Amino acid sequence: MSNRNIEFGKGSRVLFGLIAIGAFLIGVRYIGGLGTVTNLSDKYPWGLWIGIDVLTGVSLAAGGFTLAAIVHIFGKEKYHAVIRPAILTAFLGYIFVALGLIVDLGRGWNIWHVIFFWNRDSAMFEVGWCVLLYLTILALEFAPVIFEEYGLNSWQEKWGKYSPWLSIILVSWFVFVMTGYPWYAGIAFIILAIFYFTYRRSLPKGSTVLLLIIAGIIFSFEHQSSLGTLFLIVPTKLSSLWYTPYLPLNFLLSAIMVGLAMVIFESSLSSRVFGFGLEKDVITGLAKKLPWLIIVTAVVRLYTLYQQTGFVLEGTPAQLFFLGLEIIAGLLLPLVMLLFPGASDSPKTVFYAAAMVIAGVVINRVSVSMVGINIPDIPAYVPHPGEILITLGIISAGIMTFYVMCTKLPVFEKH
Image (tube, rainbow, N blue to C red; front, side, top):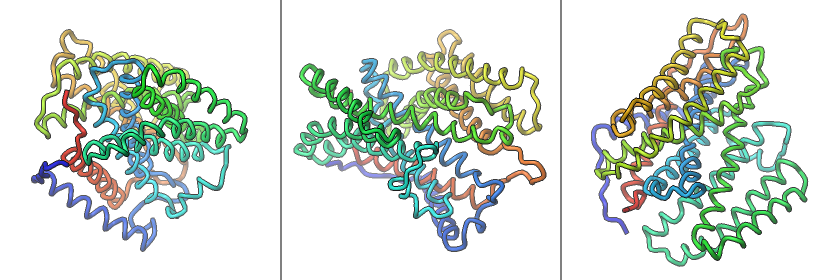
């Protein structure tokens, strides 16, 4: 077991303070109702908590499936050193997304209804099931870290034996839940079972992990795009600067892009906080892949913007300002920075470029959920201080949980 001590500095005390304030205000919210700490209404039912806690939180947690695909699907084993922290970031991200959603819902204690009351015509239903199942997959992916720390060798053996079948069952069950046809689920089960039996002898360990990765990618692709689908029902309310029938594709591509940026950003910070040095080719290699994802995301984003507006941009000053930040500061500028000769070899350049990509996606999600919403004759929504403080509290809780788990568990493998 680990004997590493947890040290809390001034920054930690600030985060603990924000956590305490956020917890207090969550209590106020449940005692006095949503109106005591929010400016939400029937006209503006979705605000900061959906824009930041859910939409942004889910996209920033995409590093788990993005890096897992790079390592285990495309065989880039040199990035294995950062896969555990990426999975932990995703795992914690989704846990705190669920917490934020429970706070946002008028009757958050009924969130379990999605499990028993099925509405296959609802994008929210699909997102709810995907998040639930993907959280299960992330728990399975992170479990070996726990087993390693506490010497649970028998549990490790059971994990290797049963996790492939659990992955197959979860994907097959998801197919049935979404389609309602048992034979579709049966076909999915047979295909994955054949895959497992084919590869388990040649890859006794890799096949186990690979099935988890495949299941995680399936669930991630589904709900990352479906979050964009949610906003297809408001074509008259969402500004043409962001509304497009391809909004699900935009959400998916930007999530893959920001997932890689988050791995770079988080790994760079963690190496400083925990005092270890990453091999140079790890960050350099990831930095060389990021421009390609930015290019694909930018081309699709600009094409859909042209399709909706013909580049005749009509909107409020605030909307145009946010659009400029999203496109220029969040896509074009970091792309230029990373394409500059030798840029990928500069840790600072890579770090700041990744940070700008992250900021750009945050701005995009906030724009789609708040800034871009136009409702005639209704005052624009402005977040209540209580909403802001609760969001900061949830983010702070996520950061501190990550710090404690990285200190007490072997999250950063030795290579």
